[in-house]
Image (cartoon, rainbow, N blue to C red; front, side, top):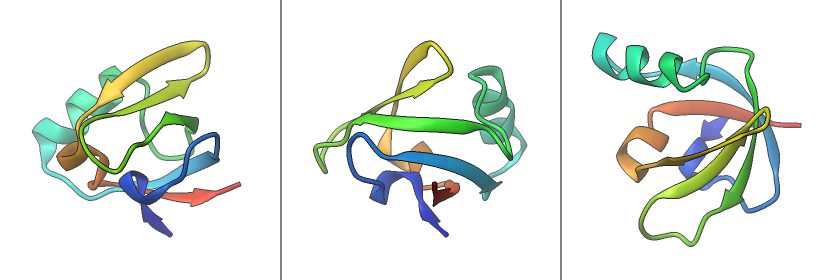
Length: 74
């Protein structure tokens, strides 16, 4: 299990836990990021936001928020 911000490009992962407060969880849930969701990291350049895809939707997510999303690679 590792933070989403540490996952490499073109890697698929399953969300295991969201280690944030209620506001962070609500924002992530609204984007389709919740426990058991499958996502893929499209762009992760180790600085700035990550681009991820959840289903057919591409989302930009900041590093602070990405560090709250705990995933396992699949």
